[in-house]
Length: 385
Ligand SMILES: Cc1cc2nc3c(=O)[nH]c(=O)nc-3n(C[C@H](O)[C@H](O)[C@H](O)COP(=O)(O)O)c2cc1C
Image 1: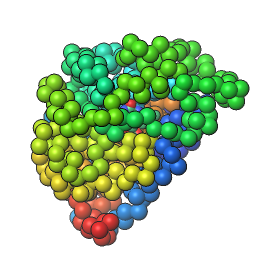
Image 2: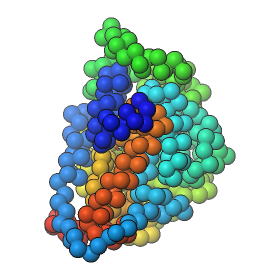
Image 3: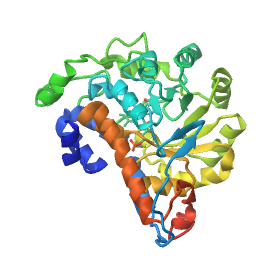
């Protein structure tokens, strides 16, 4: 898909998702689109954002608008950051390098997943733009320390410690499609792959994507059981403290939903939290990111940067998060749909689309500076209370 085709077909992030569905083998589309259990939380992420009603004041006039934000020392053109997503290399050759380049061109932060299919070092060197590195806590803390040291050497600007993924979730769509780990490709799976010749042809450029950051994985198929053995379900605040002491630079804790935990993170010197339920991919029935947001902002005040993710598909969605006190939003699936359709161009297009839609929302709401947006925009100034 070139830029012209993108503009023709992809008039919104939702439209891009539909395009990605056509282009990707079903098992990989579902791997991105799906979530844990009955997918209650993933639906809730979007429906809770949609449920918020905005009451506009339209006559303050905003002929020019500034949506740029400062996040942990970096000025971003838009309050949208690319969140960590593993396995992207199954969607497009060298997908992480494409997305990192797109983020750099646009001017935002790219977050490398622990499960990237290009190495921490390759992505680090791909652009001079700011990047964050996402890590987990392993039973072998030495492995976590090694990831952190590699990120530090590769010049990453921030460290994201994800704490809601210490147990591998069961995602029903993956089970149905035979994408259970270890991978069990049935005839249906093979037919799925060969009936997407465009994808097959493209993937010849970077065949057999794998988890290159780990020595132990020789193939994607080995991922599930090996990963589960590596992850430590017994992590505590002591571990957060330990990671804080290792990482020289801004530290971001991802997967926080409770205000008490956000407060505790603050007291340990964590610089930012991502209010997140992992895109509904971990604890099904967890509260949505948007709904968990305001109590966390109230708990930490201005001393901790509060970010949020889960279900942000439109500029107007981002405006709602900012109104509730987030400084920026992370996007997961939208950038994966972008990369699946058109590689670097696709991700860049997604970032531009958010920028355009936020700008239009600001014009309609008469906000010339994004910092003017606060809870007073809601019909009920404390939604959900
Ligand atoms: C395919 C996929 C892979 C993901 N991999 C990771 C990961 O490796 N580390 C992580 O912290 N979060 C991971 N996430 C969660 C995202 O960072 C983010 O929290 C979530 O996707 C946000 O919701 P959204 O997809 O609705 O934007 C992944 C999400 C998806 C869809």
